[in-house]
Image 1 (cartoon, chains in turn orange, red):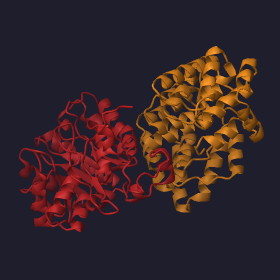
Image 2 (tube, one colour):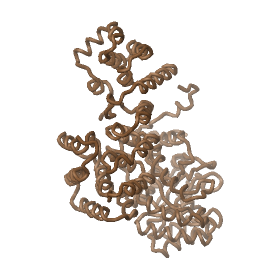
Image 3 (cartoon, each protein chain N blue to C red):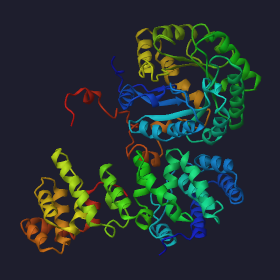
Length: 299
Length: 312
């Protein structure tokens, strides 16, 4: 499994997918442009082609099988284009077709596209990051993408994208998780969520929960997934709060956090809620199962 | 004012409104009164810009943030791109702004080159008007012409002369801020005549009703031109209602407050009715937060929420 992409394989796969869904003459336009672009440093050609792609590909959904998704994951670990559209696939293919031998020149040209991108162009750019040549040159760009006010752009960086887990230092990672919680983006669509969990993040999420409760607002039950592995007295009190909440998804999430904790104090807490413990065992509820059943978000 | 009472409320397009200068409240109310799509022409911002970079960020915000913000309220946002006539008079930045235009003019949802034309009818305005007409021809986009508020009649005639001189098809040119004095010539010459319902300086909506009574509904477009000034973002639905009360037939109202704008700007290939009645799944997921908010013609919000004393 690669944490950088095999670019020629990624290009071949994207082209193959487009070929299956696009009429020949439209595909011919794209093929011709890709050949020209591979061979020139003309920014005007790059900009007009990048912008024009949806007119030729349409914005229809990319129709992928489970086998297609597996191939994608082999080419770049974590690449999951399940919800991509044809124009996005076309734009990614274009970005992978630019001359890229010189990293700083590649970065400069792609940055120009970022600087003038419309909404859907920004989404296509950010979700292509893990496939880019020289991905390490785009870490600050990815962090910039998280500062957006456009949720769809934020999600293009944060969700279903291996780039953050592979390249972000802990402070940027923690900010991304906190902001996901703030903008209601589902945490379970963030890759390597459990592997990158850390005590500092757990503390920030607990503080966040206290602010919300003070304002009589709810928190997402997904918080307990990231707080559970770092049990201390404050977190234990938070879990108790959630176990006593009238909301079933809060109760279950806090109970799963207890089940998965090695701390005896968590087991003691859970022993006061035997019916939840039974329910988790009976349904073999883990975080994946929980997300699918109780968090109404299509992935 | 009340909303139309049919089971399927009327849909309106405001083809000239500067949302950058308006609040989120306006988007909520616009949607509630049936505005499904708006066009935001590039213009000046009240405060003159002193670098081309300010224009770049402005254009980026029109195709980026503003489009996203509108979609959160179920409104489809389009824009036009140009060096506007007022700021064409700034020689320090005009050429650099011209270099930016091709970068933006072919982007998704850009429906015309505009506003271009004359403000004071200076030589610089004339030069950049003509250059941008050539750009519009090159990229095959409609043109939105801003007619001057001072010396309007001569400015309007000359704008149309220059379009013809450059071989631009009148059917692809919208002449905006028309009035009783300029309407006849604009329509006779085969251009689209747009009227901005704007208090005091432009068109009033009662006058607008009389214009539609006189000229019918062909090639006539109603807009608000609402901006940072004392203007009304509801000018289009309000004018539609006034027309209905004053006996203008429903199909004429639909033409001037919806269909004609769609026909004129739809020539760009960047604007079609299905964009809001049946958007692609990817747009529903990303712009509309997973909701097909427009399909059911349901208002996204209720303005009563806004008038509540409680802030939760």
